[in-house]
Image: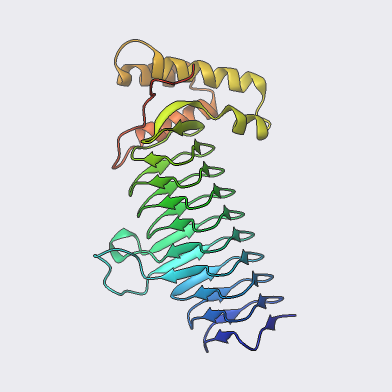
Length: 266
């Protein structure tokens, strides 16, 4: 049964699903869609053409669907779509897309967004991500499934972070991060592979060893990077995990690739 506190304000036109709980002082705009089983604790602001997936929990002072922080936004009916089962802690903000960026900001299922984290306009965020406190995405970023972004880290606009990657805390990410990569530092440098994350996902030991061989060959081997990339693609063509990295690198768009720093692991 849906329960709406008397101190909440739900605009006519808003679509509220079954078994939704809306706490005091929440403000829901006329174009908002809230899925079944969602819980808005209190003091939540939802506006714009925003869709919230089922069973998502939203804590106080979260603001979703506000206009993009972009000088190029022209006031169009752009969108924000958030998946099911997400957990949005205090002060999280997520913006609508822009007309020039595809018109939509998307966040996948089961994301855990800690206090004051931010998803900017036109970002595409995958499933099962973790954004620690104050983790921030600039506009047009792409974040794959099961990515972890450490506290106080900021990702430059148009940057891609591949699936299963981990970004350390207090890190400025200016370049693309390969899938399964581990980056850290004042300005992010590739320090190796996210071995802890792979083990938590129960990746077989043999596959981890193969991925480490491919990583060494690709980033720490002799010769030109383009030649090493082609060699890895040929040698590991049958391994879907290695080829995920190869495909990610070859699909580069706006940003250069994050490379190993002085503390890079083998």
